[in-house]
Image (cartoon, rainbow, N blue to C red; front, side):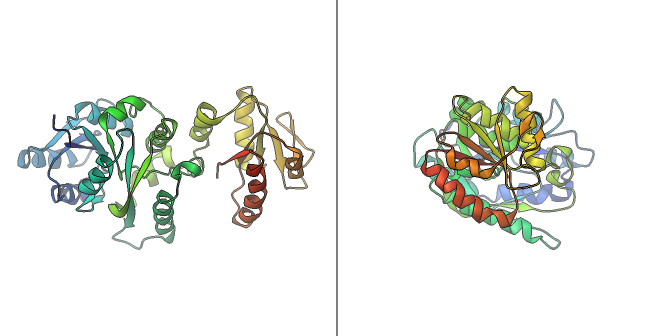
Length: 334
């Protein structure tokens, strides 16, 4: 096996309108040391035929049919079939920038073995692109430049699902494709966080996300509730929770209620605070809601923030800064 060979893992599901262009963007990479391992997830269009034709035209392209249903079984099979030492991902309806492979590889090989190289992303669409997508891409790209991009991992998946590259031995070590937890890209991100993999940022756009009406993230039920509270809480309890100090949940709206209910079901009884005067003193799920002023007397603990209103952000940030100065960590779940 070449030490710098790249395996591109690509699940494919009814991607016929975009698949030829996608494969073309891979073929046009300025680094040719790659293989594409495409796994068809039981497409009902001509995606499999396109993959078969592409594999006949280029022996670096291999494809197979998934043994299961969904992105996770397809990714797992692609990974198991891969022969490269360096691994990256691709979505079948997107486009690679011409230097994606070379830029990520250069960044990854320039540093220690246990790390992840991550490049910038951009959205595009044949139709009008919503401002929210531009803002999301800008947020991801800007977050990568921070000293610790993982700081906001409980707010959002901080590693774009398709703009990273990692050594295969590192992925084996974190069990990158062993789990069955969706969203799979968020699960992957949490696994890199749990392993404390340093993020090596690539300053340029390496991947172009295509927005269209049939995108998986628009239609798959797995992605419809984009709060992803279950996976956030699972990994918080797995990685960061300290049972020896108080746990505070700040916010009594829908998110706060779901978080507290889930914690109680796991026999964890948090302090629950709110700014809502109408809720202070109420008993919900057996927990009496307290005013946020109780934070003034808190000497140690952890705070889960479950308030998403933009107008509250500055106030929350100033209060939480005081808490951090006392050594009280906070985790934004919204």
